[in-house]
Length: 364
Image 1: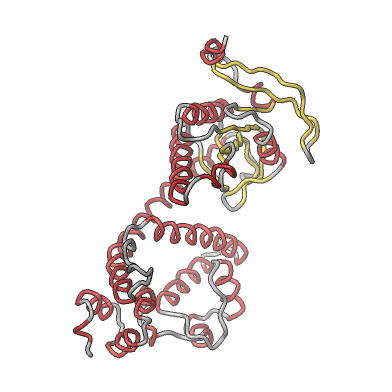
Image 2 (image 1 turned 90 degrees about the horizontal axis):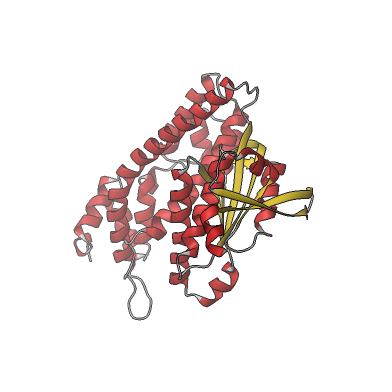
């Protein structure tokens, strides 16, 4: 039994990544070649370093290394575990250059590492789930051939690994550009602290999602969630806003203009009202100041928007008085006051339902 019995491309790709023939054969005979295929992303397992060895070569103390590792969301290590590779050495050199510039403190590096680690963990999982590279591998009993899985993954990673970094750098530069312009604009307007921002915050959720999830298959439910995400990202971005996060059946977005926030809520409500296969959505929007931190937003403003979406009638957009007062000169929008509502931990708040004039006329 020799390596010639394995797929030629699998063996060649593993060899190209520094995996030795003995390692390939041992993994094949041991039924773990699919794990070896995953490990090749980091190079040959025989070239790994312990934390002690890595610390000595990279010049980073183990306690600091462990803090950074955990901040990135990676599984913790023992000092004598061979988990570090040449990639980690290169990353350490970049980190030392960043800290050596004097522009970034240890605390800020850890803060950014937490954000980056969280984003990349979500991206990598979504990448594999969305990929069609691993379909139809099981036999009639549901068993998966490790060799076939290793071959599929190695082919997939050979295409993805060179392409994804370029996409990530491009996306990061585009967002860095946009964020930097927002910061400069805030300073032009007299801001003293750009972590305190003036904006509109909106929450939109799918009505009856819990019941819907019990009625649909996993595949059907995935399509509903995907449709919700697609519509949310498309409509929010088209009005100059940003999706902050998806929280199950709910999306949180921010945009500088309360008027644009109303448009986003109304368009999303209309899209779902016109789709007979999807349930309605409802939206809650508030405007004011919020604390910006780690790519997210905090404070009473956010809590208010989150509270009012839960009391909005399906298919409607509910806004605070601060939103209503700032949207002026729009003869095509109608704001109807409802009785003040008491919101937990916030107090009594005057709310308005915003609708388009054409929709109101159509109901008459």
